[in-house]
Length: 457
Image 1 (cartoon, rainbow, N blue to C red):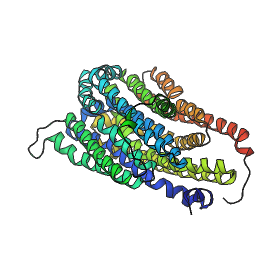
Image 2 (cartoon, rainbow, N blue to C red):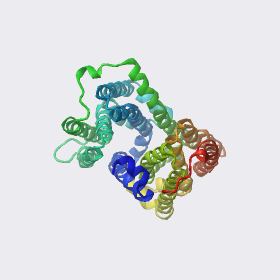
Image 3 (cartoon, rainbow, N blue to C red):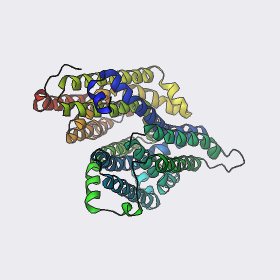
Image 4 (cartoon, helix red, strand yellow):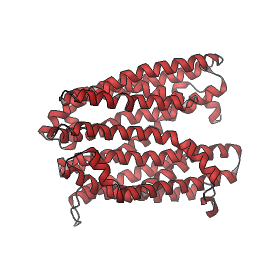
């Protein structure tokens, strides 16, 4: 039975979770990169958590540019594989690597010349900004490891070798975990490097993963045979890759801008603002372990919806969507439960002091009220992408993170009570649910209702 036949005939639940599970594991591994540095750095000096919070939007943007570019060249590469066009397969892979190289150069320049201004925009606390600059200078100016790792992982995934891709991610994460305490605290006779050691550990893990990914690609990815000339930029092909990549990159940009805006808003609360920035950093690390499984579920859902949309099977399509919504909402409800019951214990992972616990516990409990609504919105947004309505997905993402959240946070900060700012999160998600439902009803009336109602769900 071919993969395409399974998309159309395998029981939807088994198909959805079978496709999503490896991706969920990979995404959880990726989330480890975000949280491990924070745990060890906080154990070294709790005041440095705020510095990592300021650097996080830039790190997120680097990942977004790298993965967005990969989405662009993977789409063309996979299509060319299906068409049997080996010349275009090699050329799209080569031009994709070149595009990733240009993206890496962009962040090298940013790290060398723009990191200080980027961090100062978010916070007026000079020690926090300086510590953040130490970290960001390393991870951005040495971002070749990040871009290389993501490039070779996506090349392996494009030919169905997702197991090799997962191996590279696990290798990088394990190396990062091992090196973090050694370089931060100065074990095994090495110098004590503090937050800079955390950055170096991350970069080394990414570089090793890049080398391993390159080896596995050139050893086992026989469907892709690049030559040096394939690396030369082709204007038309680059334009096609970038056109596909831009929407994915913009969605990540929205998240980074939102994060920066929130840091700037809470910075206005003086000493409490410095603590609140650290709280936001801890929250975004913790929530990645709740959101990442949902994103993995989405990656499994999109091809199922897209295939059955093309096959004209409305019942099967809608059943897959319903199952994904139930699963996402259940996962988010579990995350909500954890943050309501043990917020203090979660914050203590970051060596939280009394001040951070005082502000962080009510913050986590308030922000997590948005989780269930977010689960619904994220799945519906992915269905828009699968149905060819990328603009709807971008609109919903902007509504969730930018259009409602930032203005609401700013307005709630005006009375001078920090605790009110956290209410912006559930407010934004409730508003996003309304937008998601309206957009879905529009698509249902114009597209889904016209699809034949098959019975083999």
